[in-house]
Structures are given as C-alpha cells and as structure tokens.
Image 1 (tube, rainbow over the protein chains, first blue to last red):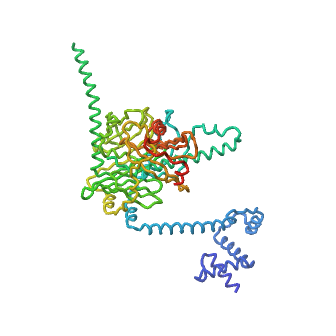
Image 2: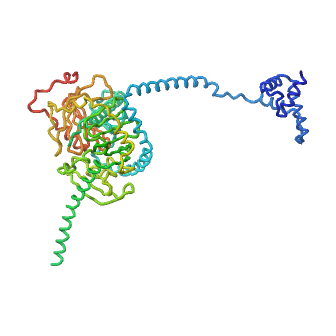
Image 3: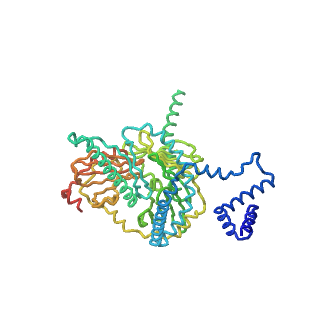
Length: 231
Length: 334
C-alpha cells in the first residue's frame, strides 16, 4: 500500500497523476498532510529531484518547512473584518435584491397598467434622444461658467435666493431652496422667548415659507400650462 | 453750407438707421415665427438659471395633412415629455396619468409668442436689431426685445441667419443683469420628417382630459387694482393649491394675466394670520412673491421683476359690486 502511495507521490511531483481521476490525487494530498511518513517521503523526493536537476542551493537547509511553520505560529493573529461582517451584508444584499425585485415587479405592473399602447410607443419614441443630452450638458457646463461671472453685479432689487424647478411640464421638483426672509417677523415674538425657542421657530418658519413659495410656483406653472390661449 | 448739408444728411441717416433697426428686427422675428411653425427641425438646448443646467430636446415637423408635430423632452431627472399633434398637446409627467389638453402651443422654456404674431407685443416692448455675432458656429442675428417700462424683463434673441431659428436667448433685467439663458447646442433642419416625429405621427395621444374646465372665468370677490400696461386677464377660478399632498388643502382664488410674452398668476386667500412680512424667491426669471396683509394672503408668481410682483400684490382690493367675503374659517373649510 505504502509503495503504491510513494509511487503516486513520485508521479505527483513529476506533475503527473497516476490515475486520470483527479480526486485520487486530492485524496493523496490529504493523506500526505496527515501522515508524517508520507510527507517526509514527499520532502525527500523533492530533494532527490533537486539534486538530480542540479538545483541545490549553496548551503543546504534540509528542513525549511519546519522553520516556516514555527515562524507562522509566532506570527500575530490578524483579525480580518471580512469574516465578521460578511454574513450580515449578505443578508442585506438579499434584502436589497428582494426589494429590488419588488420594485421591478411594481414597475412591471405599472407598465401593464398603463399598457394603453400609447405609453409603450412613447417610451420607444423618446429613447434615442438620450445621446444628444450628453452634448447638451457639456455645452451647459461652459455656460455655467459664463453665468457665474455675470452674476457678480447683483442689484438690490433682485433677491439672490433661488427656487429650483423643472418647468417643462409645469411640475416643480421637490427640491428645497433657500429663501431669505425679511427679518421683521423675528421682532414680534420678541424678547421673552429664549434664543433656542426662537431659532426653532425661525427654522419652522423657513420651512413653511419654502413650502408656500414652492406650492405657488408649482401651481403657477401648471395653470400656465393648462390655459395658455393667447392667440 | 456744405457742412450743414452734410450734417443734415448724417442726421437723417441716423433716424433712418433707428427705423431700419426696428424694421429689420421685426423682419427677423417674423422669420423666427414662420420657421418655428413650418420647418422640420431637431434641436437640443440647455436652460441655464440659478447656477443650474437643464437640458432639453425639441423636435418639430410637419406631418401628413399639414399636421404639426412637436416633441419637447427634458433630459435630466424624471421623464417629462410634451407631445403635440396639431391642437392636441399631451403631457407625460411622473406619478401621474398622461393627459392632453387642447392648445396651440407647447409650454416650454421658450415663450410661445415666438411662434405667433410678435407684433402683438409692440405696445409694451421695442424690437431692436443689434447686429451679428457667432453662436453655435453659425452667423447669428441679435435681436433685443426691450421692455418699454420698468415692470418687465428684456429678452435677447440670437437667430440663425440662415434658417431664422433660435440659437440663444437671454432674459435680463432692465439694468442688464442676466437672469436666465437658453443656449442651443444642436440644430438640424431637414427636408424629411425625423424618425421620432414619424413615430409620433403614428402614436395615439391620451384623450383630452376634463382638466379644461379649469379655464372658466369666475367672478371673484377680489380684484387687482394695478397691473403694468398691457396685461390682460386670461382666466380666473378657484382651486386648491395642489401642493405636496398636505391634508386639508385650502382653496385659493386665482387669476392669470398675460402681456402676451409672460404670464403672471395672482393668488388670494384668507389667512389665519393677520400679518406676515413679504417673502420672495426667484426661479431664473420667474419671481415668487407672497405676503399676508390684514388677514389676506396674496401670492404673485410670474416672469416679472420683484417690484412689479409686489406692486400687484399690494393693489389687491375688494371687488366693488360683490357680496362681502366670507370669514376665514368658511373659506378654508371649503
């Protein structure tokens, strides 16, 4: 038994598996790792091969592997963060993917809902437009540069704050915008209120104000869109 | 003697020059309007405002039976498309069923009057042909549409010498501050209808919605006592501000005015507060103004300077022959 094993070790070293079945050599390696005798055989055969090929180093260190394994044993243990976090992320991913499929499914149902061939045709129709957008936005970048130069000489009457919308179809994006308030309202709720309460109030005022203005802008755009019969 | 003759000659030249400036401007604007209605074109442009860029795609063409076909598409963010077949304009916007309205124009960043009779603006704006420059690699004719008073903005148009189409547009205050710009990045004029428009021709647009009933003229208990010259009432009604799904939406009295080039909306409703300081913001050349005075909230939105918006808002008064307005609570509950 041991002979056949040595033989197969020998052929394994020569890069040749005795049987065509790979699992046998796998087995062999496993056995070799467990069996001290076999692993020494493995070592010796290598040494023999090295001698035959005249590949021996100047100073011969017969048992390098022992040194290496002690060195490894002395090495500090590195705790890899991967092993700890891998599991949860994996579950996260599955969560995400399920929700993604949900979204997909709902989108699909949307498509089915609006399956009046109209929508389908429309989406086919406008798709090729995409390519041009890149050129457009590139040109846009240049213009931004120019505009910010011009914006320097602001005049007092025009406020500096901005509302951001996409007015093409008359629907404002739900984008927040900063508004400067004329500071009178702060005077009223005066001195008895503590600073903190006042700040809180100011923030709330701001938010309410933004909403009011945004709502007006949005409605304006929609109204204009619905009833512009000038001619 | 000779000299004074020369002087006279020069003077008459000057007068003539001013006249020809206007005449030439009108010629170009007419050419623009004609081109916008009759040519097959494929264009891309960007709107620049608030340090932001919005790219659009705009196609127009004449299909079978002289049917005008038009597509406006916003390229960034959620899909917003406007399609037009003749008099039917369809809006495809996110989170909403697509719908159509009967209208001759597409509402877009480009004023719809440019497709119509531009001379309707002559009472309130001056047209000046300034000269030529180079835009989008083409020879462009610069035309200024200058407001005659301080209550509106001015518009600069760069038109393609060859096709008459718009190459660039800028909205400025009278003092010359730039508010909004439109720059075209591609213009193709073709004999044949482009592929997209051919498809549009075969598309069945969504049915014309019942939204049009909002166009009625309703008598409101309020009236606007001051407007810049030339602004006329387009429509008035009561509706709820379709704001971000807040519960218990309030109805507002609404009026829409236009001077042919820009629209101004006026919103009036009773407020629980008695006074609130003016608030305002601008979206490019669109001003939003809001205040509460004596328990009445007034909002003004439109393409006019802040002074104009404020003046309109402050001029709101009771309509003379009307029943007194209801108290706050009645209106807000409705």
